[in-house]
Image 1 (tube, one colour):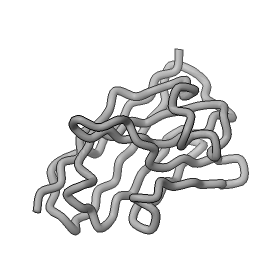
Image 2: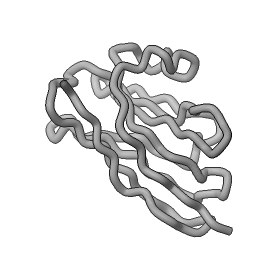
Image 3: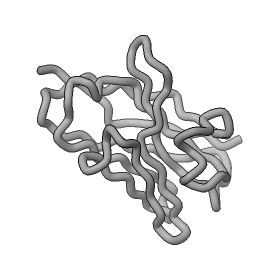
Length: 126
């Protein structure tokens, strides 16, 4: 069974940058859309970004568009999330995800996500 393993989280100051990575193992995710959600304390899990490597289509949540960039290496089966100009409100556990549904499906259909990572914490201080 495929597994997703995130890395790259940590404690940073507002305005800093981070790059999260998500490696897939244990199974084949060929053709799957890959992406990220996040969950802040006391809040629901929120869509962040998704990428379809077949054509390079990407989609971003409103709160991160213009600051975060999702990309991937389909040979190494790794997806990245570059977080720039971080804000305190970006503090959350970031989850890597994979689904056969297209990117446009992701923001409103979290229940259809088929594979989840364990999450990595991003903590942004003032």
